[in-house]
Length: 203
Ligand code: IMP
Image (cartoon, rainbow, N blue to C red; front, side, top):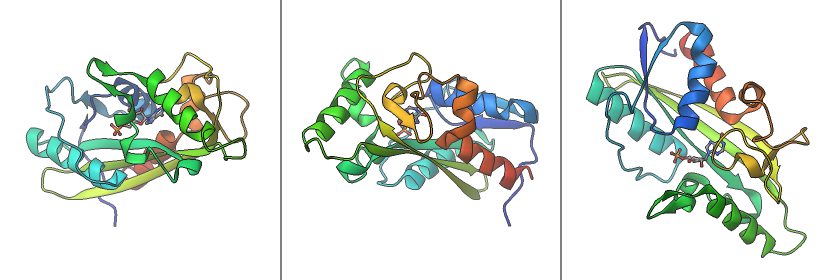
């Protein structure tokens, strides 16, 4: 039996503004008071696991323990079929530079690695999102969402964040960065995971 969320304050344990904005927008109609990790000055724990759920658990439990609030974390990334699922849990690492994250560099690498495999390499990929809600007593619940699509080049669009400008969801002829943010939330990996969280913990 899934534990229900009965409080009125939910800590969203992410320092990523793109993730925080999307989660806050989807939860807005449910009257939950969202607190961001940045507002609480929470440290970012090392993501030492090699699965989305492992890393999401680390972030949610660390935040719940530090604040005494139920904490929702998001671990997500893009899995490229031609690259055997890479970058996967290392999606953010591909953007890492000494001066912060550079997603143009990360997208150029993704396109370059597929192109190097030849013209027949599939350009299919999935965005994956695992959400974990952890309570201060150590209980947690896990929810997942997937958005299948393919990678385009050159990149297109100004909305969203991360790899959105190169990702075209199945059934669409626009990238996630060309979609209106509300439309993206309806079909995205994160939107689907938040819907499962709402059904499980609020239903
Ligand atoms: P992590 O979950 O903090 O390890 O980082 C996941 C990374 O995946 C983010 O920094 C983004 O680059 C990428 N990512 C996750 N979700 C999305 C999305 O909805 N659009 C674009 N990129 C995403």
